[in-house]
Length: 270
Ligand code: KIV
Ligand code: NA
Image (cartoon, rainbow, N blue to C red):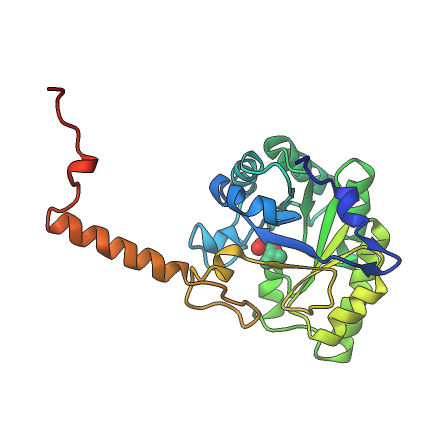
């Protein structure tokens, strides 16, 4: 299987219609990427790795090095999906030039095909700057976790008319700037649909609408690795429960000396 390309992802939406929704999940490690790759169109090395992998309180402290290291692992572990790496907070907002330097560093270190950054109209110039210089950009609007200190929390967006209008104009600005897709996170459904209808590139929903052109979730959330997840996460399994049960069995066997057994023990040749 040859790796998908950004233009092929972009062209899945034709004249406002996406027949087969785009499938995206987060991946942070090579093994995780190997397991997800064949089932996805896109793998996102999300800065959610701050909380999921590093136990940080938000995505704010995530560094370019963290993104580069995990991005490289995910590219090594995949051969089919387009790999998109999140630009961490502080690595792109202040100027298109800074954004290009950070994004180029990420692509060179990882071999990923594209970056994702948060923000709408304020980032449109940067999106165009990168795109014109060889770096495809995925946008991210609505509930943008890097702006938690401005938004005041992780609640759904677009409930007021002014917020709804802003989300739609942000989406249009990114689309016109050449974003190849836009993540729409934590947005009331009618606004997610309005955005999907208003822009020519695919929308990828998370806590948005089944009518978006694709969906994304944090893999560890949907696998049931955590007790507390946002309402928009569907827990497809209980991997945390499986791990706990398995580790309990191991601990019991070590304590009663039934592990290692004869099968796991070397003996000298007779
Ligand atoms: O960091 C992340 O995982 C993301 C997705 C939730 C869209 O940005
Ligand atoms: Na992110």
